[in-house]
Length: 151
Image (cartoon, rainbow, N blue to C red; front, side):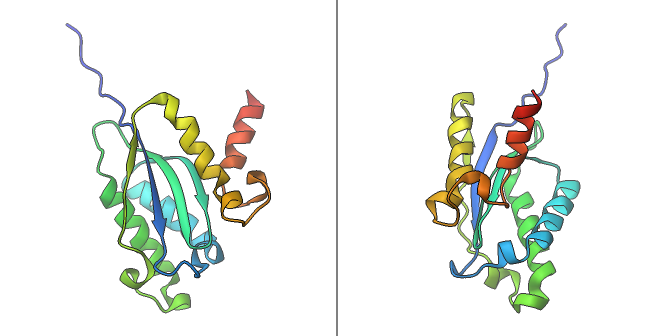
């Protein structure tokens, strides 16, 4: 008798945006964001496939555990943890800090993953923040390039 194996939840792309596009809180408080991400991952496991942090937005692909595709509680936790970490410096409560809009995109085709990663990693260039993806320090492109070189 074959025991069915749990299927891996497809990758999910989404963006989080600050309420005001002129704010720079995500890069100005990058260490707080990293800590919030780490704490959220421990509390509600997920893997960060790709990420880029811009001054007022982050774009990312997450892989959720097999059988647990509850993205919203994980995103809510991340948003809350970051807001708590920077409230004293920004003066903003969570509901003032973030846009409410969240539209996740499931990446069901393996062939689409590279295109989504490219979009994420090229965001600093397309927004005029960097001349090249590798020049932007708040990006998983560095991890991806290091992994490719190690192969």
